[in-house]
Length: 328
Image 1 (tube, rainbow, N blue to C red):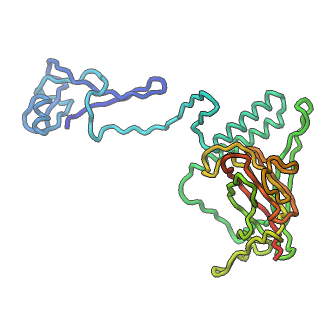
Image 2 (image 1 turned 135 degrees about the horizontal axis):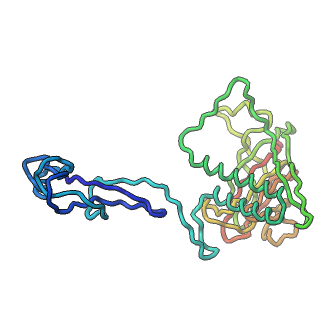
Image 3 (image 1 turned 90 degrees about the vertical axis):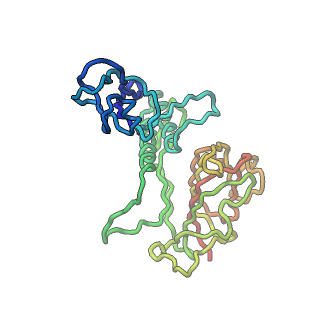
């Protein structure tokens, strides 16, 4: 294998690899020698299986290293370059997709909302959206971590309460007299009525025809009063009785995705509290959840009456959490 010298240089945002060229010339200084035999030139040395070494002080040849040029031949097990790719997205029309993660996409939306609020002089809303922007960036960074997470504690640690809590802010009134009401909340503390209030959670793909949001026979999570007790290995979790168990607190979020979890679907979802059977989009008493919306409600309706429908040709993925009173 021949001995070669390589170098690199940067030009703008590009990196170039160059090879030091060997040219013929007279003289007897800074020439090369062969590791086998008495070969006095590079070609004979390599043909004999030797390695051509530069920098010898002997006077055995006339090859010398002079200038750097682009590499002229392939080299097995050559140079490996590691780099970070920064995509350059050119948006041609609204159907194009930007190469960003879901967290980055949400961060961009919050940043634009913050700048819009700044342009209108609404600094309170600007700060609100900038906090959301930074939170999404932190989630993005956390999402790239690898390996196990370990939480350390001591005997003073306590199990958190089973309460449902929502905290946020809302902007009301026309832009000229807009007002942000902060510290809005919608909280619910579970009770021990009947068999107690129990948590329910699902990633739910809302279908294109009206159906139950919370299925009869689905299993509960932990319930009020048994948060520290757990479930026996041989036992079973209580299940939902759609005709009698009542939703007390409901959270539902439109993820703006289809049921594959990656394709965008911005079509709305409609919710009925009276067992609406079909075409909820045309119902005069339906609740509409647009793309990205979050809805938090305190209710007192049986799960069989809580219907949902996607006003779309495809399913819409939603996040659903609820506290439901187990009537058993």
